[in-house]
Image (cartoon, rainbow, N blue to C red):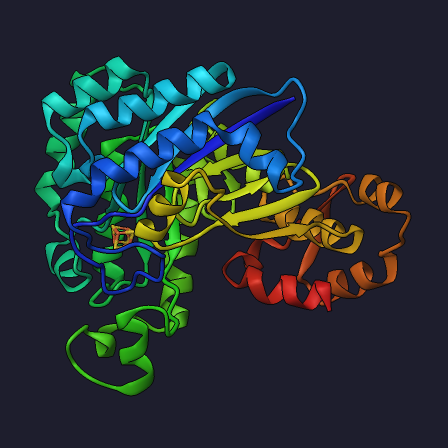
Length: 385
Ligand code: SF4
C-alpha cells in the first residue's frame, strides 16, 4: 500500500499576526538537535510504533514526502537532505512528489540547487498577497519583489512544480488589491495555486485583537465576510478561465499537478508524520506527536516515542471522515459506495440538505453546492448533526 511522509519543521523567523499554528520563533541552536531527533524518529519508527501498540502498514511504499511547517526553508540544506536520506533508508520508496515549503525571502540560488540535488521536486511557496502593505500588516517577512525573484531562482534550479498561495481576507485587502493579487498570481503561472480564506480565532494575535479590540494588528481593516466570499468566488472564476482545475475547496492545479500528498489526507490514505506536533494515520488509528519542539527532541533523544495521543478511529468517526473529507474535494463522493461500506442509509438527511441548496448531485456523485464552498464548515456541521 502507498503512504505519504509528512515532516514538521516548527521554526519561523517571526510569528505572522494571523497564524494559529503550533509554530514559533526559536533559537537557531535548536535547529540541529531537532533535525537529529527527526532523523532518529524516522529511523526507529517500527520499534516506536510497536511499543505503543500501533499497527505498522505491511509492504508500505512511500510515494510522497512533504516537509512543511513553520518555515522549513530556514534549515540548512544539509539538514533537509539528511531528513530525505533518513526517509529513503527507513522506507521502501518510489517517490513521485517531494515537497518543501519555502518562504520567498529564504530562497537563494545556492539553497534551491541544493534542495533539487537532494531530491525535492516541488516547492510550496507562501505568497499570501502581492501587496506590500498587506504583507507588512500580516507580519510577513517577504515583499512582492521577493516572490518574483524567488520564482525565477526556483525555475533556474529546475523546479518544474511550484505551488503558491494567497489568503483572501487579509487586513487592508480591497476588491482592487485582491484582483491585482490574482492577476499577478496568474502571470506567475505556478503549476498549483492554493487560496485560503482568512480564519480568525483566539489562537492568533489578530484574532485576539478582533475579540478584545486594539490597533496593533489592523483588525479594524479586515474585510467583511461578504467581501472575503466575493474575493474567493471571483478567484474561482478567473482560475477556471486560466485553465486551473479546482479539485479541493482551497486548491487548484494545472492538469496533472494536483498535490498527490495532500490528496492522501482527503482520501483517508495512510501517512506517517514526524517531528513536533506531526499527525499520522494508518487507516485504523490516528496519533499525534508532542507539540513542543524541545520536549519532542528530548523524548526522541531518550529513545521514547514522542506521541501525545493515540486514537482508534471508530466506525462512526470513519464514516464522518469519509463524508467531510470527501466533500472537500470538488469531485464529491460516491454516496452509494459509502453507504454500502458502512451499512447505513443517509438518504433522508442528504435529500433535506439538497433541498436546502447545500449539496447537489453531479451524476452519481454528491458534491457541495458550488455557492456553498465558502461556508463548507457550516455545511459539514449540519451534515454531521
Ligand atoms: S510562516 Fe506560516 S507557520 Fe510561520 S508564523 Fe507565518 S503563517 Fe505561521
